[in-house]
Image (cartoon, rainbow, N blue to C red; front, top):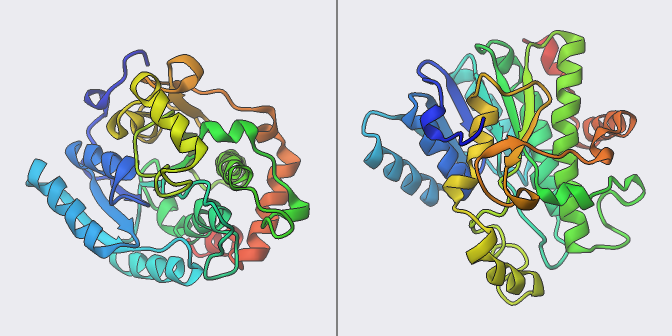
Length: 312
């Protein structure tokens, strides 16, 4: 795996990939690389203008790329259901689902259209519901993979069932860390459930290290203390969005990627560099907590994997 780059991506011709949050940053770079490798790529996002521009940029680099854009707002379970319904009609199968979209450390507590705390709602609940609804198409895919984007922030995360939605007390970073821990636990639990039920999925996770994207200015803002220190560290400890997408691409395409694996950069504290196996904190391995989170998610979203597994 040492020095792994986009040149090591196996040919992806004949494979269909769905990527959330693909109009910029890590998602765009992931879509660009997969399109260059020959995959049929469906970019999703909530800003149709940015979606159009992303397609134009990919086609400018790869004129024969098979790429399209679909509206998907992960802050709305109705939008997730609508996307999944459209996708089921137009495409019978999907080989690769990359749950990439996210928001970070919003200064004030906000909620999704369904009343979820915004970070948990977009980063986790929306992806949980999307993955469940696409399960029939994934099961028809060729060696299907699901990749969840976690973060170094999962190391400080805890699943607080007593205040899951941060209604009693909202702290931006605590909520963000919880959402990214939830994404890693979801990846591991999905693999366990797939193995037990025979769904045939490879489920793994990745994180980008410290990648230069719009996530920080769109979250805590340019005047926050965290943003100030981020700007100081950037020249030394960060990497481009394209480099930050490499762990995701490894998890999505490499023959060496493992079921239930987790990948990140190889440099100090996993901040930058080519992809390697990343450190999983003990709380992410708590099987009973992951199972409870799965059941709570099914109840709160009204979406059951068993329901869609039966429809496959």
